Image 1 (cartoon, rainbow, N blue to C red):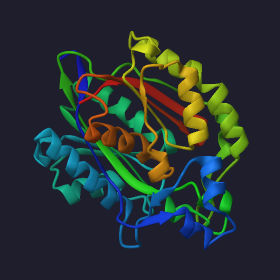
Image 2 (cartoon, rainbow, N blue to C red; image 1 turned 90 degrees about the vertical axis):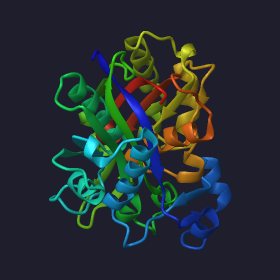
Image 3 (tube, rainbow, N blue to C red; image 1 turned 60 degrees about the vertical axis):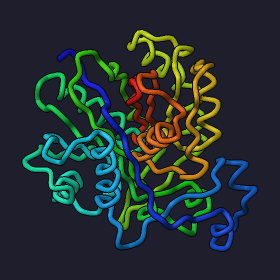
Length: 312
């Protein structure tokens, strides 16, 4: 085998929906203020009895079903998350236990909002190197657990959810070379820290970095896949804020691409945002099997990772 591919995707969101009107009853904000600044109208919020590994397992089960596989077919489980409460067992091990995956390697990756694209690259490398045959790659976060619901600058942004992909060996590469990196000296611009942990960010710094520094990096990810941005059928960026997504997509130059805007109904779900948005595009028929799609995560640590994949 010369590469790996995404065989199927799946997603899951909790049933509870928190609207802008609901938030306006909690903090000094309004629907107009939220929509004009971040483009979000609703977000899904998990209950106290819905831990991150449960969200992840639901999304993974859907991806497995879509691929026509069983848990026994999986030998690597990777979960990108920054909101797991416990250190051990890790989230991936708990997902494997929930699904009944036997004897798989299980690892968590904490690269915050860029976690899924880092995990996808890791799975691609493992499969191509012969370290795994089929992998479950999951992005799952319960941002509501780390949010100060009295802070209107952050509570309006977040949502909970999970997205998953099944990665398997392929004769032709279906996952392009990753382009990844970070800006450690600016890592404090996005934080989840303290006891209890709380999400905070320097919004203007993140906005300037994302809209000015990231477009050429995303274009280089396309170059590594041997494509021009105009060749892309879709662009799935980290769903941080509509005011970041739209100018970033425009500056990349993907003039013919569908641009995922799931942030409007899901909010910022951190590591879950890219696989969740991709799964919805597939479910809606907005992209066809084999279409080239740019996935590009960015955020915490100021980290980034992007690759072009072929749509399952």
